Length: 204
Image (cartoon, rainbow, N blue to C red; front, side, top):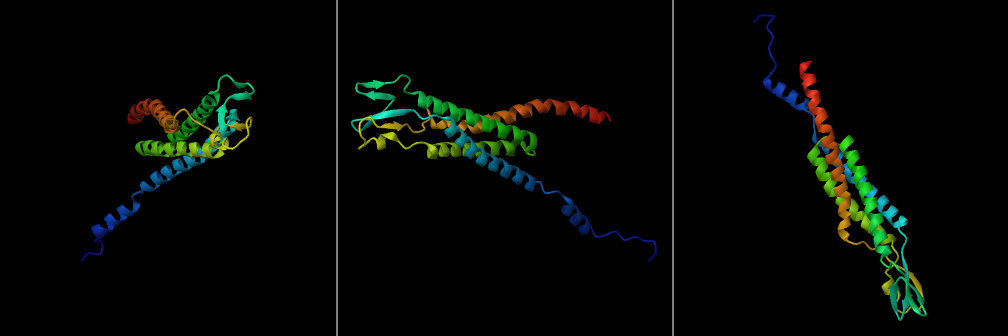
């Protein structure tokens, strides 16, 4: 056998080497999902606290073991105007906080967590719904107790605060809805720029 003869390595070694250098793309995607989930959990707690803090609970009075929202006098019984203002205010503050939370997380995910668009969209949908549910839970926990139950056995003229009530529980979907809207708008805004840069790169 000649001395200058070079024996190539077995093919198995080449295959093994290629497999070892292949990047694992599943780990960054999982990190991306975890970051979005944590952002919605923390954001849902903060947004729920903000909504409950900004909302001013309406008051009412007890008359014959019943609580009446907006009752300002029992002799004679007088109901104030805009007795549904508490529900409108609660719905408004909850909606504002939910939309802000969704937009912030959606923009952040579109800018920094865009490794996989479909995964990002799914994470925003599921995580945003969970974040909206956490908002509703926090506002319920921080809300005054139901005055209808407290009115039983209470003296006439006792002033009680109303509980936090929303016009519809489906308002929790404002969080994922605004997040996905922000994501799609940013993706659509950036898509033309990427196509415009490709011809320049090919020309080089």
